Image (tube, rainbow, N blue to C red; front, side, top):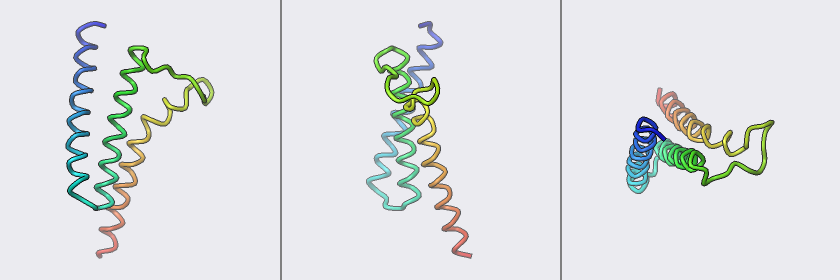
Length: 100
């Protein structure tokens, strides 16, 4: 692993951990459905970051159910956070439309 990959990996872990920390702090302060979905999406994003780094180092092996040649975990984790973000934005849009 060269210095560029080390900086890339370290920065993803650091900023992902920072985002997850503040998301958990926000979660304890709010009960709004849209914000809770954003928090869950942020935590899911951090889980994906940690899993991809563990996979990079060979600690987490991608075995189990596959879809074609792609492991199911590698398909679900990157998309899970985006799905939560989409649902959160939909909740916000629906809430705004109902006010008018």
